[in-house]
Image (cartoon, rainbow, N blue to C red):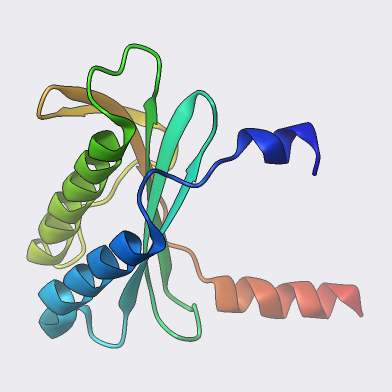
Length: 141
């Protein structure tokens, strides 16, 4: 394990907690997300809490990772609570996303936000991973 891998630590949320949060999102948006579903990933370093909520379809021709990060320095609440606040805000974002018929989008680059007295950054970009994989396969030949 190299130094960079040692710096990456799973969040304070357990696998079971992430699974339950994923189930909640999938149930909440099942009627409007169509064939798409959510997954939640987390990654933390010594300096940053990172939560990634991905809306995707099975083929990944629609793949929308929404990432939120919080710097740990100056954090006044426990890291687990901060991670939950990020997921809560991303849930709020997806609510707006669906209400506006997917017209509401996030910046591709990190952008500052605040919620419940917490400062953090978000970014997101809809991509077609299926097409990217096909293109990579063509370029390899």
